[in-house]
Amino acid sequence: MKKQTLLLIGLFFASFQFMNAQGSPDYTGGLKVKFNEDGSKYLRIISWAQVQANYNDDVASTASSLNFNVRRARVLMFSQINDKFLILSHFGLNSLNSGTMSPVGKGDGAQLFMHDIWVQYKVGKDHTIGAGLHYFNGISRLNNQSTLNMMTLDNNRQSWSTIGLSDQFARHIGIFAKGKFGKLQYRVAINDAITNSLDVQRRLEFDESGNATNMAENVTYYAGNRIIGSKDAGKTYAGYFEYNFLDQESNFLPFKVGSYLGGKEIFNIGAGFFSHPNGSVKNVGGTLTGEDVFIFAVDAFYDAPLGDDGRAITAYGTFQTNNYGKDYLFSAYGTGSMFYTHVGFVFAGDKTETRYQPYLSYGSNSYDAVDDNRNIFGVGVNAYMSGHNSKLTLEYKNQSYGSSNSGTLSLQAMIYL
Image (cartoon, rainbow, N blue to C red):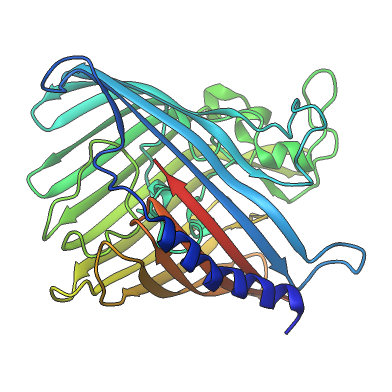
């Protein structure tokens, strides 16, 4: 084992003595500015940061295997003066490292941008409508995942199934409705599709008239809005529905909890979809043909205490079918199917002290365009100094795809207030 790997493992265990010696205050609802005595008029502010050291065993001989990364740095604010309407703003940066930094903090490397900005209005006791740049997504729980309380080091990448193709970092601009009928919760949305998608940016070139000049024949591109126009490919449709069998989860905000650490007893079954008519396009003999995009998933989530001594289990599984157009394959996305699961166990212990949660994850992605599957296996452990508000995560992840087999060992420190 190389010395960099030993260093990361050593830092993970050595950090506990320092962290425990410092202690941490109770979260008690975070930072909330009250505008009246009972707190019904307020401004809520949440801030979090995730900082990583990553060792990758599959890099060029001229590159460093050990690198540092500010995975996320975010600020989220929302406010109400009564329960009939709300405004939310969320901004920050992602994956700031030596390759994405800017010499003077400008340009693409700075990465500070608006993640969410929406307004919403209650239209009944349990129903709300809203509009803006929002995160009320369809497909699955993981496509609506909060980054504050993930159980694994990060979300399953392929579950953010439209990121950069039809949206801005998993957010669309549009209108949404959310609410519940008894134990059944729902969220649905109609949105505009992004014009300048990742597929357009990386693979296609355009002339002054906006025509693609290097579009290969019989290759499917996720670029319908840009190439065949917003009238035919400009809208997307999404929905996610879940039945809460045990404790009821909050749907006040769209962000799904990754692990309650036994704080609730949750068992949910869900199903969701994403539809983008003519979202992809193919050049067939010089004729552009629209390809409908449709993604569907079913999933199940279980999180519960296992007695009164602090033990708890978290388990999740999803199966997803992806149709981005015939034989579509680009980056992490491809027409085919995906299975993903993870399970974690919190050891017994005092909830005011450091608690440990080892976990396993596995994902398999099949693509119609190729014979090989992308298989990803992860094993890790969380050390919670103050729940998700202060934790360290050590994870090893191995990915095999075709002739490529790579492993990454990561140590992440996270704090949110």
